[in-house]
Length: 119
Image (cartoon, rainbow, N blue to C red; front, side, top):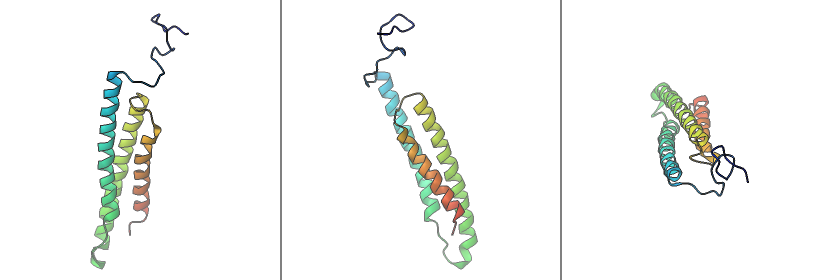
């Protein structure tokens, strides 16, 4: 069994690898998950708005395209910010699954596709 730098027996990182979290880690995981879910929900709503906008008639095509481009830019920026926040949370090991990056990636791709196909 390896000894940690402070002389305790255990893994080289000083923690156990049994998969259990301490009380503080569990609270950090719950708070991180709640923040990421809320941030993903906001970004998803903006993506939905970008996808749902359609022109009211032939007179509204240009204005609708402008609104779609603004919403796509906003959705892409929000998805990028959520992805950076997710990377931070994963780097701190408050959350462990990389699948948390799937939602902002898909939202970013939807925003890019909608940006390229505004009509």
